[in-house]
Length: 293
Image (tube, rainbow, N blue to C red; front, side, top):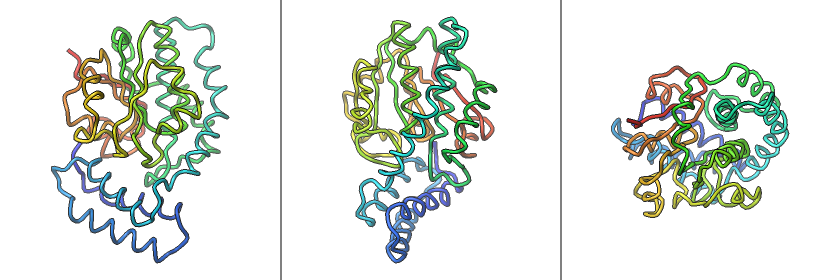
């Protein structure tokens, strides 16, 4: 996905948000925003990939703050919030002993709704106290774009590219269903802390590796997956996969610039730019299969 003019103020809003997470020093916050503005000015281009520019901006932000993980505390809180809602989610997913197709659809729906666990997106409220209510309402509504029936026949060798903390606990239900259906799963997480995204720290904390066949990283702390920074082993695995499942907007922003496939984008359209690029409206629950013959 290419840069949209709206991306500029959203990225800078997020810089301000995470700076305030890191420090109360207003001079340092002002310096951080000033330095990130310079990066934006240097790299903004209508033909640039939005997440690539975001990566440069957030890396500069972390450098000036001298903080390699401004969201460290926030990520713990997100995981705690997710754990509170997880029992209710599992009850809904397994209610009335659904058949395999319905079970997969429900697990995907819960995982997509859990993409709600994101903090710092301008105009998007992901507060913990609203999540359970929002989850139940969105679960009742169902997927707005539902390609899960097409995905069912592609689960033999799945590359699952994770997004946020908290959300990953709901992804684990999808892992269980894919394994039940006989599929193999390679989980991909960030190679270092960036925003609220899952890293190997969360994989170890929640023993997520026991749910999948192998775990790989994106090779860096880039926003999404920057192909130029990704390990060759990961790129080979993505080319050989029967299905790539890409969670969240940042992964869409980067992977939509390439021809990997079949690829299922599972996300909430939390911003107009991503929604427009997908040809959808803002605020939809999406499981969209692309690059599939």
